[in-house]
Every structure is written in structure tokens, then in C-alpha cells.
Image 1 (cartoon, rainbow, N blue to C red):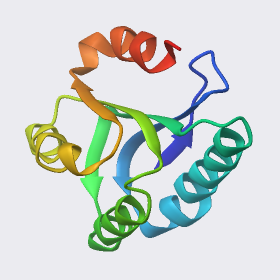
Image 2: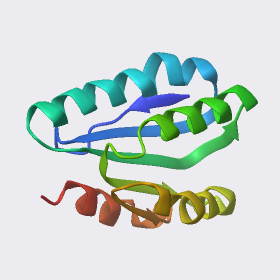
Image 3: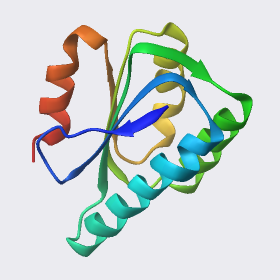
Length: 125
């Protein structure tokens, strides 16, 4: 499941994943939130900032959701100003290190225990 979360600023698309992330999570939550964030960022002359937390209770992605993630990421490589990924999962930390350099903006990862630092970084103007 993916849910929108409030981290105290409208400049950031902020989402939290828990349980199993599915194709429906992408089509009903992540993509609409990202598209709205992109529209708002472009209207103000900025790129989007994206906070993504894979915290307690996160179990993984379905195969279709992994495909959705690759597709959405590929379509928006140049649209991000900053991305903060918060997770303790080594596979996803490795993915951030591997794919982060392909994204035009700054990409950083934090362990779950440091989520407040990640939120402060992504929110700093």
C-alpha cells in the first residue's frame, strides 16, 4: 500500500509504502500524487521534490509494481529537484545508489531512524 503523508510542506510529494506495493498503488496513489506535484512545481518554475518512505511494515513490491516503478522513474528522470528515500531495506538502498546518478536532481537515502533528517533535507529551500 502507498499512502500520501504530510511532512509539513506543499513543495514536496511525500508518500509512505507499507505491506505489499501493487500496480493499483501506482495507478491510484503514486502517479496521481506525482503528476499533481509536477504540475504545481512547473507552475511555480521549479522541479518536483519527492520523499518516499519504505518504513516499518513494508514487505516489498509485486512484479507489476516493480515494472510501474521503472516506467514512472524513466519517464521523469529530468523532473526532480531532490529525492529522499527512507528505508532500512538493503536492496532498495542499493537501487538508490545504482539509479540515483541517472536522475537529474539530488538523490539521497536515509535509514528509517533518520527520517526526520530526510524530511528536513527534502523540505529545505
